[in-house]
Length: 171
Image (cartoon, rainbow, N blue to C red):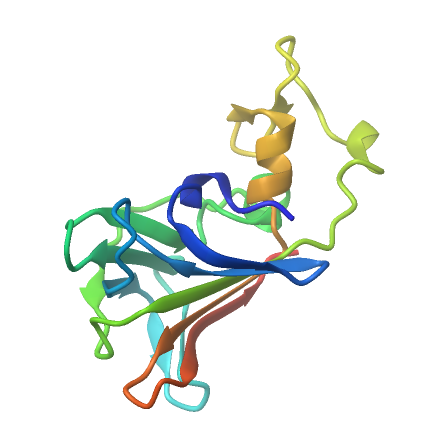
């Protein structure tokens, strides 16, 4: 099961669930405590952060130890819809630290799109790279890794339970 290309090197305890993959986020030194920042609107009914009327959600983690910043999910750039269906022009977005920081983060990405079976439906440039809706071109293996159709982000609370803060369908 693929891991999004932009998260390679930042995963621990990877579990392949068949049509999805989950892992704990870690920094380049193996530490797992992060501050979490987001641009999004909080829904108190669900406990999730989502898009706002003026922009798409964005989630960034910053290692408490190394200060490395890792984009967890950008709903203007990542996932199937943002790659092939709706060109959601990126606007600058200011992120704010979420109230449960610092914490451990678990990410789960679902992959139910049969890319290899439907490869003939995609456009490629002369270098063999797949052309995305925004005009960028990326290698086919990266399409399969970054073109997930669902993302769930969770944090570990003080009791050791996982609580979701992002849950987006992307196809």
